[in-house]
Amino acid sequence: MRPVVVSAAVDIDRPPAEVFDYCSDHRHEPEWNPMMRQAEKVTDGPVRVGTRYATRFAKAPPMVMECTRYHRPDTWTVDGKSALMTATGTFRVEPSTHGSHLAMRMELGLRGPLAWAGPLLRRRMQPMIEQDLLNVKAVLEGAQTG
Image (cartoon, rainbow, N blue to C red):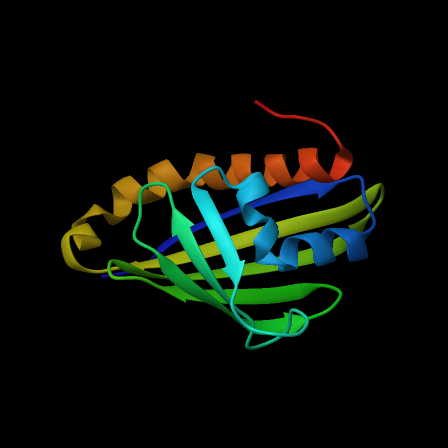
């Protein structure tokens, strides 16, 4: 089956280095992704290629995520695997007129009982990813979103 792909982008009124440093450390993800309950860094040292996180989600099995690309100040990728899916998240931060442009692309490979649900999952995930990026914007700009 083809992977489920969703993407979104947002402009953030913060410097690119600040957006990159906050977002590329996935221990912050529970602050902006309401589906993620916990992200614990399980490797030593700074965030870089090879950094791993043990994650728990609200409605999905636990997943170990690993940073597979890290190019400060603009791009990183994390890959994850769980019992039901594989996930690859690619993030890019670019300078913009008023700060930064953050783009995210998520690719999910579904297995087992979820394999048939790709189109439904994509329709559900798209607005969630868009809201996640609005949440990042709100956190970094010091506001709250609903």
